[in-house]
Structures are given as structure tokens and as C-alpha cells.
Amino acid sequence: MKTAIVLSTHAARFNAVAFKGDFEANVAKIATWGYNGVELAIRDPKLVDANALLTMVNQHGLKVPAIGTGQAWGEEGLSFTDPAPDVRAAAIQRVCDHVPFAARTGAVIIIGLLRGIVKPGVEHEQAYAWLVEALQRCSATAAPHGVRLVLEPINRYETTLINNVDQGLALIEAVGADNFGLLLDTFHMNIEEPTIEDSIQAAGDRIFHFHVADSNRWYPGAGHLDFKSILDALFATGYQGFVSGEFMPLPDADTSAQRSIAHLRQIQGG
Ligand code: LER
Ligand code: MN
Image (cartoon, rainbow, N blue to C red):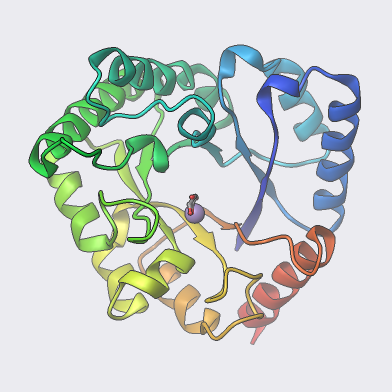
């Protein structure tokens, strides 16, 4: 099992010395705890010194299996389904801008909340059509570079577009690109899927990335999810990617990161 953990960065501040110091200290700790990778959230790749970032991460023996793009939605309001054409175009451009860095690291580019939510006054069907078109364009840009894109089904309380695996698989069908797949997150699956293991099996080889958090969004082992059964189902699909921890930093970030990997390893050994 290859493990990663989401590391909150603020791309715009990455060049600041103090932040860089904190960032490197976190990377060093993550490596010491036995993780194999860090999943990075990058708002705008133009604001990141990719060479410095990669050198640092690699010096600690870590990979970057995935790039999160949600800050562009949270901080700039970019989305594939905004009624304003220039906002949709900027969202598409932003994802395409991630491709060179993703190609260097082998990372998947995550489409989480950047897909948007259906805004008032927009028909769901229209938003879906914009979503499909955006994903087709981004997948086509990424494909020649060997880069894959993943859409994450996200629970109903955060978005009205693509909440579960069935909807994700229908979207994959509509987009029709080999380099477009799914990121499954056990926290969202616990809310939306009838049976997590069956949905993992249904998603099969379209699972390109995997997030773990327990039922309460604490670290695995802190809630009531059966991670042995979930990971068995995941690896039975032939999944060879990273199991990436994305959970609340409770009781504190360091403790949660260490308890997560301890729990997952114990399950894998047992
Ligand atoms: C991001 O990976 C995620 O799971 C979402 O809940 C972010 O809002
Ligand atoms: Mn997630």
C-alpha cells in the first residue's frame, strides 16, 4: 500500500520564506512517519516555484500523487458550471495550467468543487452539459502529456453535481476520455453510497485516486468505517495508486496523521 496525505499549502505564499520553512518541516515529518507521498493543493500553478517544491519533496523521498484544485473555486470562484462564459473559460484554463507540473510528478489533477454547483437560474441539464464539455477539453489537453484527471463524487451537502459513484460513471461515459476517471473519498461514500464496497467494485479500474477519512471525517480508526473491508475491496479492483489521507486535523494535525497510517498499516498486516 502506498500512502499519502493531503498537505495544505497556499500556493500564493509558497515563496515566502516562513511558509516555505513550515512547509518543509511538514514534509519532513510526513516522510518520517512513513508516508510515501504528499497530495498538494495548488490554487494557481503560475504562483508556484515548481522546481523548488519538487526538489524539496523529492529530497524527503516523497512523491506527489495528486494535485487539488479546489482553492481556485474557494478563493476565486472559478467553476466549470458558472453561467458566465469567461468564468467557465478561466476554470478550464486553470486546470490546463496544472498539466505541466502534473506531467512532471505523475500526479492526477483533481476536479473537486471546481466543477461548481448548479447556480440559481441555471438548469441542471445545462450545468451538466457545461461540465461534460469542460472535462472533454481538459482531458484532451492532458492526454498527450500522459496526465489523468479525476472527478470526485462529493456529498449532497457540498454540491448538487455528481454526488455518488453511479453518477460519476455516467459522467465518465458522457465525457468519453480514457484519461478521465474518479477519485473516491470514503467520507463522501459513507453518506451517499448504499454499500461502499459494492460501489468501489462498480467503479473498478476507473478509480484513479482514493481519499480516506472515517465516518466523522477524523482519521481512519476514529469512526465506524471498516477500513479492512474497504481497502480489500479497493485492492481487489487492481488499484495500484495511493491511499491518501484527507481528514480533519484532530485532535491535532500530527497526531491524526500518525494514527491514520498506524491504523491502515495494522489493517493491511492483519
Ligand atoms: C476534497 O477532496 C473533498 O473531499 C471535499 O469535501 C472538499 O470540499
Ligand atoms: Mn476528498
